[in-house]
Length: 416
Image 1 (spheres, one colour):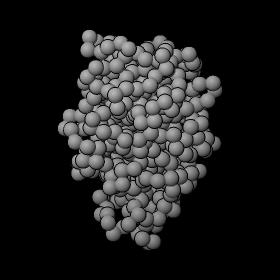
Image 2: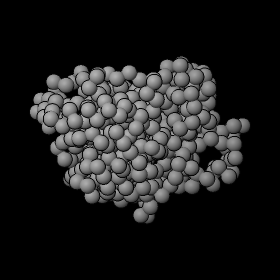
Image 3: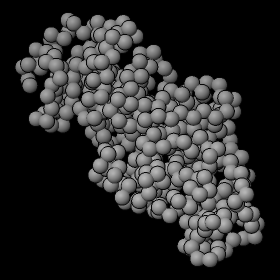
């Protein structure tokens, strides 16, 4: 691209001061969404910025697979060409994987460019480092798109934490797993059958491991942990509990009791230890996630003043993610603070946890003081205990799931 690129750079020197210039790293689903959204919303963006918003360059891995959307856009597979553009304002990261994204964003920040990223795995590992680097170079980072697609959870937490104190954060942060659990309940069939359907619909990758085993949700939980607590959790992704163990029989049994399976991330702090758990749990009709279905994501925040705030919406996809990136670009221009907030309410450590136990055979062995009730129509027992592992030792074949939300006994449920 040599000569034509240098000519382009010289030409840009005289006409870029009246525009906001953006380089786009990656031109897959998210990258195309950003490009088309900027194009379709140009009038609104010009009203906000009082100048044109322009994609001036796109970085791709394979030049042969892409066509330049406009002749005045640099299409390159060399990141150094991106850095050499005069009057470059913002670098938008729409690639996946820890590298080369981390290196690219480091160089962008040192170059004096603000950045916006949708790369959850990279940001969960290097977010604090990048935020510190941004501060050192007097630029900013937007990362709304790393957590829940089009749901503005990052900005919401920042605004809430100006006065409110956070008590708990829970999230359904992976649309693939939520789709499979919803489909198993509504359309029946096995886990494997519904996973195949998710892949056919484009909701699951050919290798769905990151989604169904909870790793994708864990990366997002780490990002929220650093935002809320200023630190990463002490737990690791090895503590994730996926959804592949679920059976259609469990789904049906739970449905009889008005319970739904959800794959939930919980961010918590106890005894000065920060935890991020990803687990398959059961929610009651009173829980804010009960109606979150299909590929939707949701985040529930409990605070001391406003109470519970729940946001739900599309967690992925071309335009929801592009929406989060564009909103971040606007917030960067307004110089919204990016420092972590730490106004946290310490939880009640004496609160016991309710668990739903699925058992085989004619009975289940329980300590005398743990049973709450069981249903005469199914092999389910709900217990309240702070030591479910002890029950597991007495009953090696049981499956147990945390119960979230208030649960009121009905006539059909018999107290043990």
